[in-house]
Amino acid sequence: MPPAAFQTLFAGVRLALDAGLSLAAPALAYFFRFRIVSPEIVPPSQSNYMLLGYIFTALNIYFFIAFGTYKPVRGRSIIDENFGVAKVVGASTLIMLAFTFFFTRFLYSRLTIIYAMLFGIFLLGFGRAFALMIERAMLRRGHGLKRLLFAGTGRNFRALRRAVSERPDLGFALCGYVEERQDHALADVPLLGPLHELEAVILQHEIQELIVTLRPEAHDAVSGIVDLCDRHGVDCLVAPDLQSMIVGGHNYDEIAGIPVIRVKGLRMRGLSAFVKRAADVVLSLLILLPALPLMAVIAAAIRLDSRGPVFYMQKRVGLDGRVFWMFKFRSMRTNVEASSGPGWSSDKDSRVTRLGLILRKMSLDELPQIFNVLRGDMSLVGPRPERPYFVEQFEKDVPRYMQRHRVKAGMTGWAQVNGLRGDTSIEERVQYDLYYIENWSLGFDIKIIILTAVDIVKEIPGVVKRLKEKD
Image 1: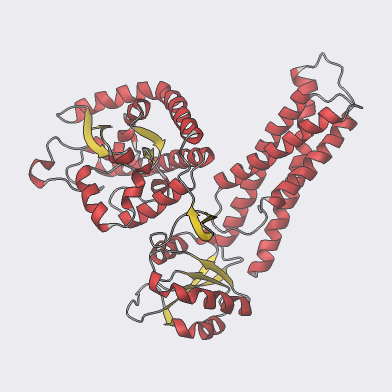
Image 2 (image 1 turned 90 degrees about the horizontal axis):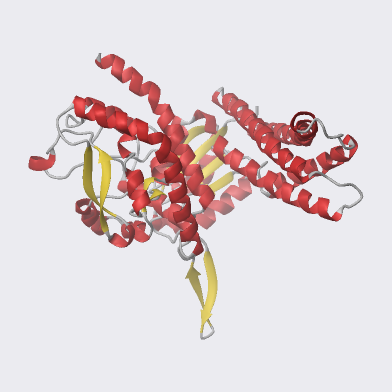
């Protein structure tokens, strides 16, 4: 199936599901309110609530279109879909509640409208997840694939190439790449020609989507590439080098009549910082209560598994470059760095204990950091803190590295849920950390926490398999 037809098909599927389930939500709310919760009440006219259902459906469809959720976005996650649903249904509910205040010919139950909102979030979220799973399954089977070409091998090229190769559900058939210089040929991706022959490559290989991943020194060519793609009907995406440009939006200002660009300031200040701190405390306490029995079991297991203390304290660098003691469950043998000095560890590191391997795989060794969060040293979400020894090195070698310390360090972060944990590229991690800092919101934090929980659950089968192999 051609990509355009495939995208149109699933836009229609989503629209049909959104409309049908939006109508069903108020009907279920009416039944739940007057048949189950309060059966003793004489139910009001159902036809008036059906009118409310039509309004609810129209509003939902309007907001889904306004928020761009019918546009094809390859790689959209189920969590993103459900966040979008909650936003749409919430906006529609507010308007419906306002409508009931001004429409006085019939007294609507506002509790029923709240029930409609809850049913709507659940039903529409399920419908969106169902459509997304079907779409991914069809993409994995080769339907609706787009022929993809990379232009350049800049900083983002390898990460994007890896994502395209490892995620067949993104729906791309990678044809190869063109390069501004001819000395970077890669064995696993075909080099189709130099950058100046891009037009011929597009025509010869029938390219449908192009991702620009040029090096900073070649960014002047971007406008020409965009025009070329426009002439040939090729979808064009530009993946800028986040290290070589300012992340976030700009505000235009002037000084003595001279126009200047004001860089968007840090979002975690003032009221936002208070909200984030309050959320950290509340969520940490909610996590800590059920986690205490588990932490007691882990502590006892560490005692039995190897000699040494249960907890491991290590100096880390946090907000504004301040050093604090970070708590962890011990996962390595004691005094392992006495002779070798500071260093990265890996899954195959002989210094890691058998129990420590399990704790690390499932991130359970990080649980004591809840106390760091409650103390105010850390946040639940933020850039992962590094040791002073490494910070001194990265400050010299990695551009904009120290900007990570404009916010509190986190137990988990945007880089970690995107696979950048442990001994991975620090340059890539910095890009993700800076994106998080410049685009922070409470919803973004919640999304990262959910993704972290999903990653932990995904590790369980691997841990069980490894334990069986060792036995």
